[in-house]
Image 1 (cartoon, rainbow, N blue to C red):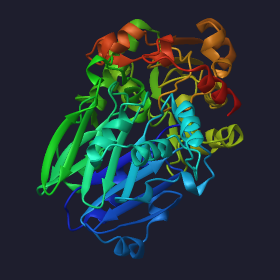
Image 2 (cartoon, one colour):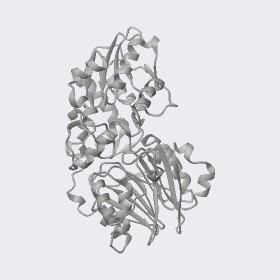
Image 3 (cartoon, one colour):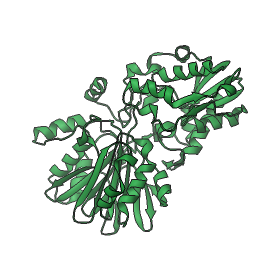
Length: 462
């Protein structure tokens, strides 16, 4: 699996670029491939972007040159478009008839190929390959007169996941798709409106969380005045907030979809213990995403919690390494067992998910080599059986081990003594929601939007 992106924006602040830099730093976990910041002083937009982590992309000299009072930023991991093309790094900045515009996009459009072909037939020339560039062309080519009308015209043609920040020379606009796939939070810092993918970005800069941008909402700020609009037709969309945000993506200290990630993740572990009990000596997490559910499992089961796997924090998240070879190496470099703790013990291992199964098998073997007597794998989500087309580049269905294997067969493959998953019903209840509130397509194949065959075939090629 690959992760997607993080966005951050701030309006009318004397330190706009610096606060955006800090916001992206807090959102680094959402994308480690590239980063960028665009800033406006009311007359022109300047920007800097490059491959790498936020800390390596931006120096103090870069930030000093990004002068202006309003800024947007973006951390990227490619969910659509070639990862090695500099033209796909965001924010995308363009000049057109009415001035300049910058855009930062988190999500994936399922009708991007269709829209791109149509635009190209009409004469549009694309520099990159990301679906985000399609949005820019739709706005610029709209025959509507006012910018808001152009934007609404473009948004009404989009299908899929998009949490967007759009900045012109004088405006900042935050947009969340009608289905609400991706989180987008609104805050306030010393009177300046702030937007971010997660509230942990607000905490770092001292901003106050106000509310979430609602599904289908367009929040526009111009001349110090904030106005809210609705995307045409958004009222009929089925709310489909990505439940995998709680499983893995969001930081546990964030609040998304109106809920504490920490509390939801801990409840996943409690439910998992009730649904899949086992006699054991210790409960250990696969760090870091397994830590909070492991605490819940331990507290519910009464089995002591221990840190049996130590993570090297100078290694990136193996989950989002772009190549399988790098992922395999990353498992060995990233995690190391504590032999004295594990020797002769019956161990419950808590992880957030099993994708191909190769990482889980390596972890089980590692624990046995460290002396574990028994290894019982427990997963704080249901079996991942279906690809995601809304912002997470999961493997094809053929590569997802749970799509063609039973739990017993997966258990045998990863060489564990037992294997248990959190049920879909238990997961939804733990998130204090209902099935009609979340997108659970990666678990049950119930896609809230019809996915064109062209997108499915493109995913297989990639």
